[in-house]
Length: 368
Image 1 (spheres, rainbow, N blue to C red):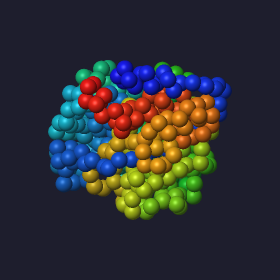
Image 2: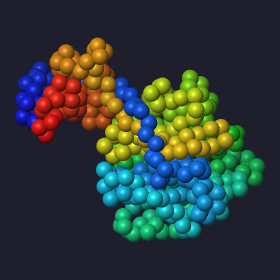
Image 3: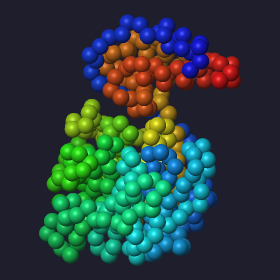
Image 4: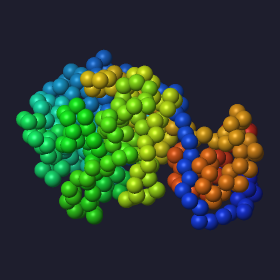
């Protein structure tokens, strides 16, 4: 911020109250941007997963040059402002003659989570590396505590997939058919006390996250408080939609999932599979009833800062933010991420001032 915006920041921080309940903001999505022909191919490309530092993009593709059907590929770039480089196959230590799909990368960038699909079974795996510049180790199964047979065992084993690691590395969300028919999955979570400990027995997250439809965990926010779900539950826009569930803190119950709405979901199937660490961009894969198809996309995540919905971002909105300071009104909780952090405070004011400057202080922006 420049001197003028700093003055405004201080001038409007008044009448601060404490001890307010949780608040949450609304947000929307900007126009999608294709990751382009360097990354996308004429074949199927799916499940884009960006590393926490934003310098690696893992995805599944059945393009030529792989080990079998869908393989995991990675595209790299030297900085977050640089374009993505041509993708490279992760090789036979990770990929097989079956199908492999990436799902998440640990916060330190040293553990890759993915699942493999061969014949009639799916299982969860990891690969590790000592540094970000080192190659990945051969894949390792997450073991029988997590990878379990479907109830009844009708020759359908290992129906566990996904693998969304929480930012602190202590929760792993995945989907399983173990208690449902083979065409329906539910979300489970396994936890551990520290990243050096073994994973505990999985627990079904239950309602309201799981429903009569199919649920798949697809991403979790950098603060660990919003879980994005790919689902066919009623109330969507057609095919696979992405919904989100919130919680106040780690270990708290999840809220009723909410559809991301028409700024994200369409009559096609789309799933939000990854987020940039600053929460400004999401990565999107396309789905149909038979599974992943299409290209890889990204879209900006935009907080709604026009609090009074008059088409302007101005002092009136700023006054509303100050009036809501410390309250449970969700409209002004827009920071540090677009989905808010549970309280209306200085983080929200910082985000608001960024948009206020763009709308009202063009000269100040030019002087930066």
